[in-house]
Amino acid sequence: MLNRRILRVKAMQALYGYFTAVESLKEVKRNELEEMHALDPAKHDFADKALFEARKKQAVKLFNQNLLAGRVEKPEDAEAEVVANVNNALSDFENQIHKEARVRKNDMMKEAERLQDTYIKLLLLPIEIEQREKLDSEKEDKAFIAKEKKQYPFIGNAIVQLLKESESLQKEAARSSISWDTEQQDLKSWYRDQIRTSEALAHFFGGEKQEDLPDNDIVLELFKRVVFKNEAISSYLESNHLHWAENQPIIKSMVVKTIKSIQDGEDLQLAELTKNGEEDFKFLERLFMDVINQNEFLEEVIQSKTMNWDVDRIALTDRVILKLALVEMMNSPSIPIKVTINEAIEISKMYSTPKSKQFVNGVLDVLSNELTSSGKIRKSGRGLIDNK
Image (cartoon, rainbow, N blue to C red; front, side):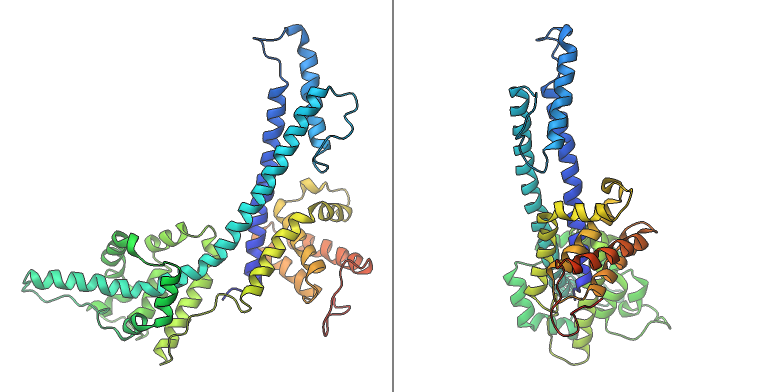
């Protein structure tokens, strides 16, 4: 099940990508303005080189100075053509970063939703393997093979049958058009080269039983010891998830718990992706958009508490973590400040530099006090008023 830390991580990753793209786009626009005002030997006199160099510098300077305003309002002594070119660049930059924000947000939300689709798809995997075994078994029978027949442990397996008979699983698969139809060659290869040859599953296929291996059903062992550990299968799953390292434990937990519940005699109940459903996805979307919409203010308050450090010199990951924590403090009145700061520290330990946790903790501790005093942070609910 997704927890809020994973949601915060996904927001951080999306924002990191967004701010990286914004910086790249700034550089692209600066280069375009320089090229636009550069001397062209085929058209211009070399005697005017200094004039063109001055225009280049002026265009870039005006662009940098008016990024927040989005338009050159007071051009000073700049030529009208230079001002017009800079304003066009600023307008195009603004349009592109808005588009970038939409794309990053949509990708972030889809990535979170894709977890559920992968969970459903993996639950369908044992059914596909049984079908693969049936095809192999039929070929073996038709060939009249005299030697000892292979064992096909997925055929008729009780867990597989319950998965096949589950209306909720089949309904969810149909609703989201989830199937293995386009990966039949992959399945054939995995079954032949990864599953049948797996030491962890050897006793199910007629090999010697390993003493240290629990006598569990093959479906559970398939997921615990092969699917999430085998390089070929994991590579396929990774190709469908940008951040598979974070997604894998969630999906594995959901799948294994579902199979275990079936083994315990319970009816198949599909795991919920989040504890609070739609509310958690709104929390994720709000974090992302709040940082973008309040970025100017966030940059200012972070700068105010980083002494002689230029905000641009602080690791981008740390800046994003700080911004996420600050908007959560200000815009999520039901989440205690301590929780927000602790989550930021834990994420910084996972994704940033060794010294980041102290830096993040120190900045957030000071800013949380100041923003609470100024009324920008207001906590409501039992135990949350004046919560530190």
